Image 1 (cartoon, rainbow, N blue to C red):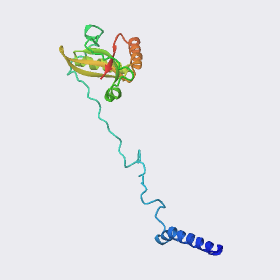
Image 2 (image 1 turned 45 degrees about the vertical axis):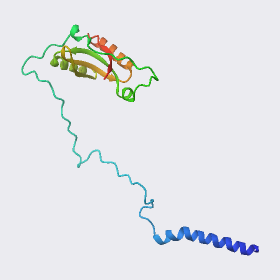
Image 3 (image 1 turned 30 degrees about the vertical axis):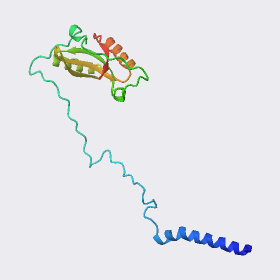
Image 4 (image 1 turned 90 degrees about the horizontal axis):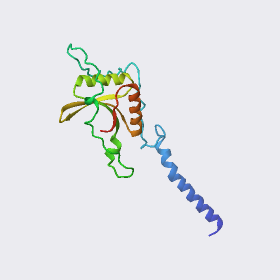
Length: 182
């Protein structure tokens, strides 16, 4: 075969290949958005405020009513508030193979007091919140009956809980103790 015939044959193959690629595109016409048909379309973000959005109304937390009785005095440090009923769990050693649930969902709290009187526990919680501590009351059933643990935290790191304990001791008369949570 001479060189001219080879060139004509290669040229014809190139033209046929281009026709196979571009002819369907020309016959189908342009697409609507120029995107492939399988592309995901992300909806626009919702409006954060506007006439069609109502403000979110959250219920206020339930407040303990004393039914006309005077507010009980704040508890003071004593045998009832030492937190002796708390069970502290040892810190897991690094690489000890602790279950994922324990490492993700656990932390440390400062137990301020353990009270048998529910209204006193909530008064103390409110007092601690007024001092800037994130505090909560946790009811627990013991051999002595139902007790209400007043706690600050939780913190992921024990060192942070120990810093909270020092701040508590400087701001109040409570000694408290760091304990594993939950």
